[in-house]
Picture 1: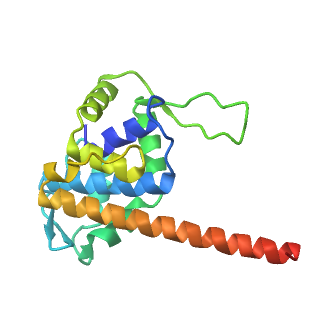
Picture 2: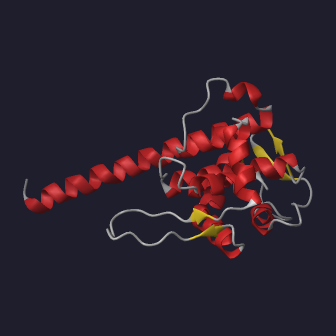
Length: 200
């Protein structure tokens, strides 16, 4: 299993708290994919620019899809720009892929339609492996899980990361900070509009 798939399984696991925002999870999944591609030699970093280096793992169609953004003729792009392009609705796509593979089953709908539900992982070797990696505090998975809001980052997490992983994780944190600022801006604008509409 890849870091991205392990992260998707951990995020779906009912034993994991809290339920995270899909935007943050999508960006963290994109970053985890990038680390997986770097680790296989499919992508290399030149400063903060990405370069295609070789094929993605044959058994993972989502990584192939991710690598296609850096295919022949594609302009060189920064890590953060790539995260925004790849991260769009990525959490939902991982959920669908894991469901199609039988690794995740939908939870029953709640009686309260406003309560958020999440797909629940099926007991499998993939889930056990992801849980073991999560419990061990492995720094790459721990770093992206913390970025997504699944946990607090361990104090010494950065010490366990190689430079390329650290650069990708830093870009994910920056993108998530920008996402939160944009969400807050929209919330303020909506509140101002509501006040004007009500005549407050």
